[in-house]
Image (cartoon, rainbow, N blue to C red; front, side, top):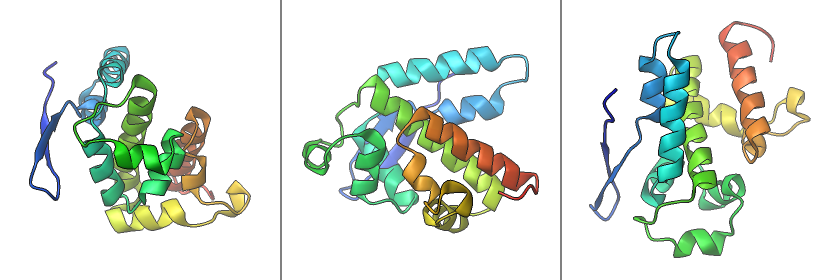
Length: 158
């Protein structure tokens, strides 16, 4: 399978080439090759994701830098000191990839970015009155939010 490099433009007109094909690997993979897709995603996480991509993803999702810090378990000062070309470690990169895949899933379920962004920040009674965003700081939280999106997609009360 070919790795596709995407070009992301930042506000300072500087481009960042990053191996962000993880979500595409899932959608392009046949039902019998999920292990291969998972191995490629793990490879991307280990190689690291650039901070520039994280910041662009945050903008698309309407997330503040503080929201991103909560997801990655880093301080705001640390994130602000990072240069956009800095490559995140495997743990942080894994969360960025999960967030990317979550965005892709949200677009499928809600049909547009603004609907998904609104849902991500809206309190839900099934989440003890907290928004889904508050649960994205752990792998189990991501899993829970993916399950809720699946229920919404299938018309089950979430």
